[in-house]
Amino acid sequence: MTSLHAIVRPATAADRPAVERLWLMFRHDMSEFDSELPNPDATFKNDSRLRSAFERDDWAAYLFTSGDRPAGFAFVRSLSGPARVLNSFFVVRGARRSGLGLRAVREVVARHPGPWEIAFQDANAGAVAFWRRVAKEIAGDAWTEERRPVPNRPDLPPDAWISFTTA
Image 1 (cartoon, rainbow, N blue to C red):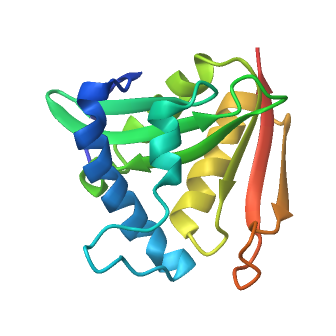
Image 2 (image 1 turned 30 degrees about the vertical axis):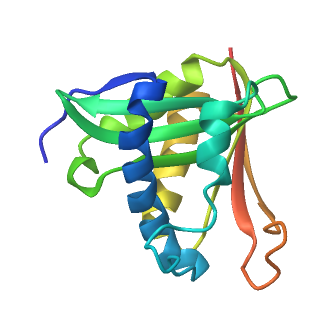
């Protein structure tokens, strides 16, 4: 795939409808790993992260675009905490493996220097390779990976968490 030019910018209230549609795509992708089915109205029940990203002071929402097309999003939480958490990260399938995701995560992380934590599922082979590559490219050898239980979901395998610090 050819490299796509990406613009990464804070998502505004005007962007919220587009991010909400991207969120449905993200939750659809994630349902493969958490076995969640959509609600009867085809939404997913866990949209508290989406609301928080737009409404809470300690969160930031970013929209990725390529030209005039939405290509993905990122939600960051715990901006004032001991470590920033990349809470949700999504790139549409048509933009994957184009370099857009790596450029987008680099820009998001650069906007909030300090300690970072990113969770992903071991069963998601694409995410495993992507997040380990991100950690190596951003932090060299100065990153760690550990497994942590998923809160309130003892039925799921533990999440993998990558941690690193940026200047």
